[in-house]
Length: 226
Image (cartoon, rainbow, N blue to C red; front, side, top):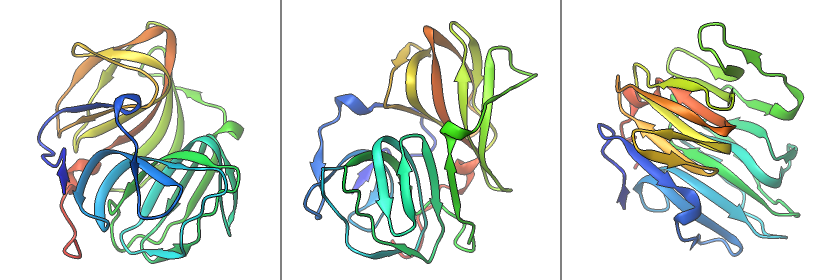
């Protein structure tokens, strides 16, 4: 399966307008944003765990990165409420079993295969810091290495924010909304911009809270295992 597999193109997907598709695991469904592969895939998805659902134990050969959007994600490593950011690197193993149910935005097979860094951050417990170079923007750093930078950003009401980066950029709206290049992106909308594309976005009158990843698309190749 291929969905939005051309990383040289700008892509906008409105998560709330995408049908839920059932996964092979009972009670687990997903909205696909981009995908190369079938059940083993390089993928970006919104995944919903129903009340009492569980996933079988598995190893993340290509790594897994996600942010909890609603509910509480649970596995043997702990309980992670909405706002939690998790990186399970290649060769990590866990057994998701979110008893209360939850929704996450997750990315699979998008790591350096030598990466072994685990990250577990509750963004509710971290204050955003004003970005001195960008008026109206405050940043909560989540992860940084030579390949990519991951963060959440708070955009003040009506703030004008320059988008794009060397190596490409992705923006997932957690709350609020913004407009970019004629598109309005509200909660659960996702924008992917290719390497070096730039634009000027404008936050809504209520502002926006956005999950941001930059630099990663220069490595947007399909692992040989897929």
